[in-house]
Length: 369
Image (cartoon, rainbow, N blue to C red; front, side, top):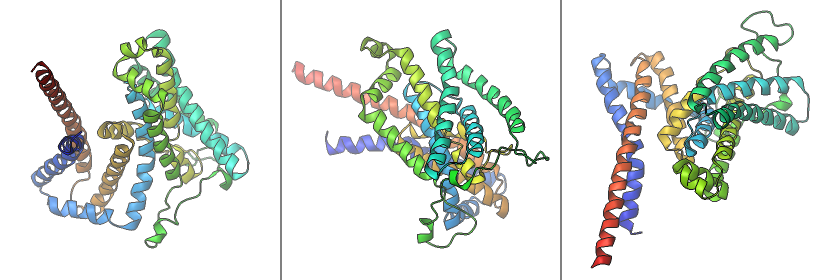
């Protein structure tokens, strides 16, 4: 491959996401001007706030569960499966993991390990229901996962009252038993403290788990026979079946893996609160899907997308304080980024197909000559 073709390939790879961010900034600037706000002031407040050490730690904390959620969605996407049920999977996993974690007293390693295993098992099992419905009864996975999200929320609403800690009498205080310190992953504050003092934020130790998940996802998908079978099944199920890859088994495995990873999305919140309560963080599953789509399921790209989403969350907070712009501008930016990225990826795909066809035609002409 020539240097020119490599440069062109890299440019094509980054054109869609970078263009999406640029277009969202331009479009949002026009909207801000129409609304009577100064876009330069608003963007300046956003960047100034993000440059603070405590805000940076907060962004990483917000990005960590989003990254795990993005990887969970990406596992399904690689199999051409749209697992929209990560939202229900991580919530079900979180409440069971918190309940088990609060019910036992074990040495630190065993306690934390038990919580993680329960979360992965419950998340995988809940996703496996959708996989089994698809392979055994032909139920569309998008529809079944949407329905399972609703069922999960109903079950959780019942469980959170049934498993409430002893002595809790107010609705605000309802939740599972507190997890002992032995079951909580230590924070990583020693890292940001190298750059300065932080007071109100603690860098979540779940970041280590997210990094391990990302590395394992990359190795599994790109360096193993199973990963090749998974990707080939998603790209061309008929060819994969002809090559000896059982499609039903791959669907089940992909859903179990996606749900298992998705079950870890709520761990950061559990480790922060030490329990599951009615105010448990929501919409991480749906935002993870957006991050995976934006990054084209690449582990490094998912990290960038998760940090971008976290930056926009933090920006929404500061815009409410300064009043430089309505906080809804952040939602507009998210929508424009996602829409233009999807369109951009399709344009890039068509250009790539055209280039490959032109190269094939040129080689055929050389052979014929």
